[in-house]
Image 1 (cartoon, helix red, strand yellow):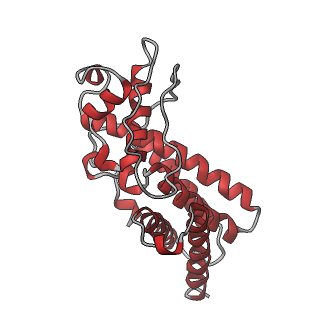
Image 2 (image 1 turned 135 degrees about the horizontal axis):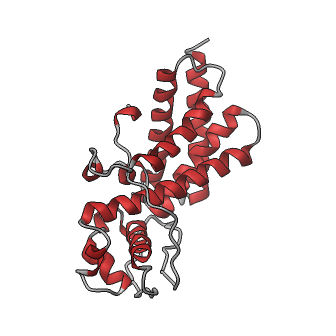
Length: 237
C-alpha cells in the first residue's frame, strides 16, 4: 500500500548558474549514449549542479546510471568534491529524488487544473502527466521510493513525497464513489501502478512495433485511468 512507503528527503530551491546539461525527452525509450558535456557552475552552487547532474544521468539511463563518481564526471569535478555537500551516495540520491518529486508534483497539479472541473477527468489527467514524466525523466516512484532511501535516516525526506501523494489523494477523495480514506489510498496505488506500467512498457520498447509516441503512451494511461475509476465506482454504488 502507498502508506507503507518511506518518503524522500526534500531539498530547498536551488539555482544553478551556468549551463547544466539537461536530458531531452526520451521518446524512443533509449538512453542518450553520447559522452556528457561538463557543466559549469559558480563557487557555492556545486550542490545544485550535482543534483541537476544526478537527475540528468537518471533521465538518460535510469537509476542504474546513478553513482557519485558519474555525477562528479558529468559536472566536471573530482570524485571527492560531491562529498563536501553530500556525506554519501544515498544523500545525493535523496536530494535528486526530492527535486524530481517536486517537479512531478507540479506537473500533476498542472495537468489536473488543465483538465477542468470534472473530478474524473482531473484525476485521469494526472495519469498521463505521470507517464510522460517517467518516460522523459525516468524518475518515478521507483526512484522516489528507492530501497536505499527507506527508513528515518533523512529526517526531512517526507515533505516532497507527501506533497505528491497528497495531491493525488485530494483528487481521489473528490470522486463521489470513494467510501473511505483507505479506499482512496488503494485507488491512488492502482492509479500510479497503471501509469507507471505504461511508462515502463514504452521505455522497454513493448509497443515499439506499433510506433507508439510519448503522447500516445500518455493518452493510453489517461484512458486506462478512466476505466479504473469507472470500475471502482461500479464496485461502490
